[in-house]
Length: 375
Ligand SMILES: Cc1ncc(COP(=O)(O)O)c(C=O)c1O
Image (tube, rainbow, N blue to C red):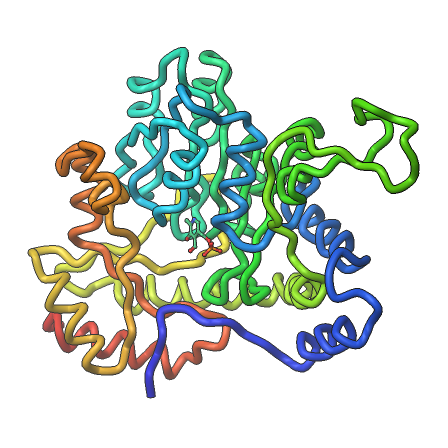
């Protein structure tokens, strides 16, 4: 039996929620969108707008932040490409700051050395569900007049010094892809404690359409009237998927508890394996672990990857440093730029971690790792 590195958990309550939406009057732009947005806000600690996926959430967040040609966005290379590429699609120049060796999150000291008066946004990622150092990042952002965008695709359900992830950055993005902490199949959201930024995000995800009479340039035209005052896209998440999201959020506490249990079991069962470095948790952080990223030392990551895959354990590597992709290479970004991130990439393997992973399944992973690394 194959064991993936991550997968969804769908139960009868999820199925019933989706069926109820499918047989209602609204397949999209109906009441379940607002309901899911309120449910996200309750967990994230800030109002949210839903979008079609985590990539769209990043695009929307950068657009809401006003990112445009001539701006710089400082971000991490230890992430999925969308954290950087969506800012570039708005015309920004992306600058990569190296990561911290223990969390693989963007290093505030590296950010400090790279920001300029052209920096419009600092893009952090809560790698594997462990929040980045937002207090330090916000101080830097305030000094140069930038906003902090938190890519919390891995981290819904996490807290940092008692504060939920949606309150840590100016704009926070989520992904609800099936491997994530909860799923809507495809889906995402943008949360913000700043009403102005959230309103811009809401308008962007709806093709830039403005209906509020107070915001119209030409009011009193009639009830049908709306204006497009800026670019936007159709990034609306349908009611059918929002219904799944609300149902999944009702299960989030159970999802978190199981992920914590599995993390604690890996920590214990793998502690004495030679040549393996386990993920850490910083003081004051309560992560909802999306990934369990180990580091395979001694240049053996490739071998361990191949042998676990042969054994049906579908480990993953998160992530190829973003600027290694030809898109960036062709723009002149060079390997070696962020050595801590590159070393992390050379050693990293994500072991299976998902709600329905059984203790027996996890024991199989542990035994296979032990057999390869000889302990
Ligand atoms: C850190 C990070 N950012 C952004 C994304 C993009 O999310 P999506 O796949 O929902 O577009 C993902 C997920 O793939 C991710 O892991």
